[in-house]
Image (tube, rainbow, N blue to C red; front, top):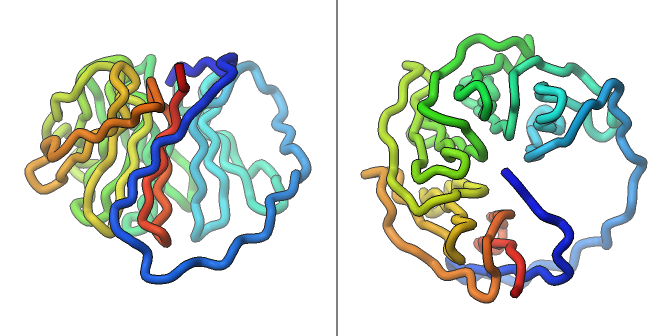
Length: 233
């Protein structure tokens, strides 16, 4: 993931996947907490993920080549797992594992959620970026960084099941368990792809205009809305 935060104007495309059944109460406003200081930091971070069940923050510490696992809400570092040039990590509750995308070393790392040790790797044809886990089929969807592939990986067999051909420069990817669809942002075009994990193919292409070069992607399961963030030119 390569981002430029110097742009003065940003835009967010909102996709309503289905109407909510009731209006939700307004949440309490966010407040600024204490920063979490990590020792020995040598470089940047990439994607962040939360392990909700174990109340942990998974920080892809790309510059340090570690997955930093932080306890929430006390902000204490549990462990830095040496992974290689990590871009992101996802949680597999069913098999008690984390999956981490490693770019320069061209692999997917499998990490035991209890011991926090790497138990296996899957070789990839190129650098990996963002990734998403589908608990329904047990597969991991891994972006080919700046490429034209979304690799579908079976962590149980440690093999690539298929490579879905997509437009160049994929960015963030998420899985929606309600619709059973994978959503993939494409930064070379102002679009978000809808991927059907049944045939593992692109089912639809949604424009994100006026959001150009969409990067960030988030799904709200309560309102069934997908938020795609890009810059407005």
